[in-house]
Image 1: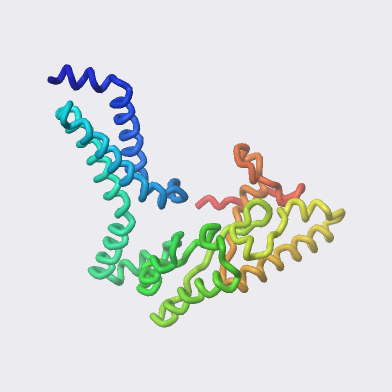
Image 2 (image 1 turned 30 degrees about the horizontal axis):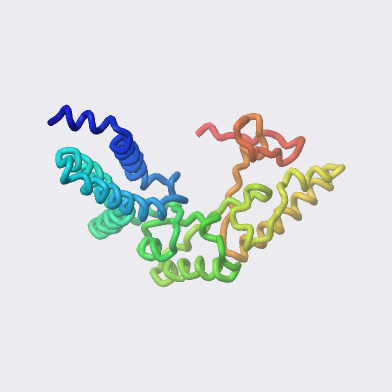
Amino acid sequence: MPNKVAGAITRSPIRWHIIIAAACMLAAYYLPDPHLLPLRAWLTLGLPLMSTLGLALALRRWPQQPWLAASIAVLWLTVFGLALFAASADYRLRQVVLQAADSDSALMARLGAHLVIGYDNPEEIRELAQRGLIGGVFVTRRNADGKSFRQLHDELAQLQDLRRQAGLPPLMIATDQEGGPVSRLSPPLPQQPALASVLASGSSSQEIAEAAAHYGAAQGRALAALGSIPISVQWWISNPAAHPACWICIPASPSAPSPAIPSK
């Protein structure tokens, strides 16, 4: 019987069961990884569906090849279990955090004050914000897509209202809005060109300084109205040679000095 199973596995349809199931297992294992966030919703739905289809195809072989069908069924049930386990990882992690907060709320609040987190749905972080388990949020493209300025502003204002009602300091609302290709909140914020292109038009130090001041004031007004604090990766902007593989390394100014890096 083992020889029959081994021989059947070498045939193309069975081989594809193994290959596809192995790929699904790998996807399920890495499902909580932040790099798969754009695909997470599709994978969360698709992996159980793929497992169900594979299981159905395996059971069709039961009358002719019960051992082989059972082996394939176990394979797809494993995929199904991994997919469900991975899909619930975010929920389980939030529950662990909240349970720890209940057991030692003072310690968790002290730790949380140092955390700035990203999010998909603001409803998911309301309790974290209200209980002081985070110190800020990072707002990026996925949070702004399809929203007007007023909608995004109100979303952030509601989180700040929860902090105020709980007697906590305001959340730090951070983003990455450097201008040019790094404009995570445009739209709804106005799209600004890369700072390098603005400064390149200046013919004197005074003109460059005035252009930089005007640029920064415009960005600052838009972000302040939204309620956010901009994060700018100054080292990348001023020192493209330090990051040759980074396509967004645009010098802020042809004569910009290298920033000082603290030793500690």
